[in-house]
Amino acid sequence: MTRTEQIEDLKGRTERIIEGAKKFDELGTEVLNQRETPQRWSVLECLEHLNYYGDFYLPEISKRIERAVPSENENSQRGWLGNYFAQMMLPAEEGKLKKMNTFKSMNPIHKKLDKDVVVKFLKQQEEMLRLLDKAKGVDLSKTKTSTSISKFIKLRLVDTFRVVIYHNQRHLKQAEGVLKSVGGTITV
Image (tube, rainbow, N blue to C red):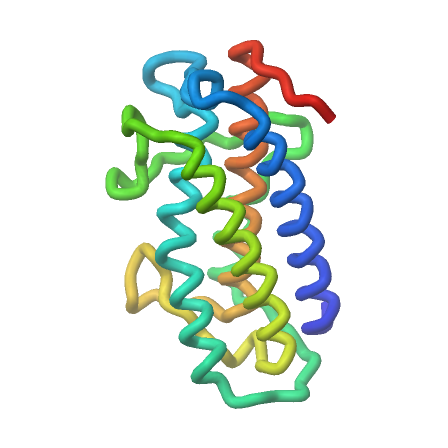
């Protein structure tokens, strides 16, 4: 895929994430804090987990785009490690999520959360759209970002965008499943 095709795909995914998350804003805090079991996340915990990652990746992406040399290069090659991480993040098509362990620092379970979590998440998604637009002028393959795992592990910008956005899709789907399991409804 070219840089333009990659960015348009990722923007489309982010716009769908925003549409899905806006529906949570219609619900009360009590419903959004319900869990299937005490060990599983609520809707707000799913979104707060994503906010934690957004707090790391959005500034990191912004900094790297600002420092990148402008480029007309439409080539956008994925790296093997970034592609591996991105594929791990994608939610399964049949509705099941592959179970993954979360770093303790990124686990919001049993935190007292309110609807500000949804507001913050939506703001982060708007920032992601802005960064995707800014990325149209840089080489997505040559521009590298640090990861939340280690500053020594670098991913190509195209892969960082994919990992973060696919991760958002994954946990939005999880949040929708939680809501369904606890009997919450969203008006469409």
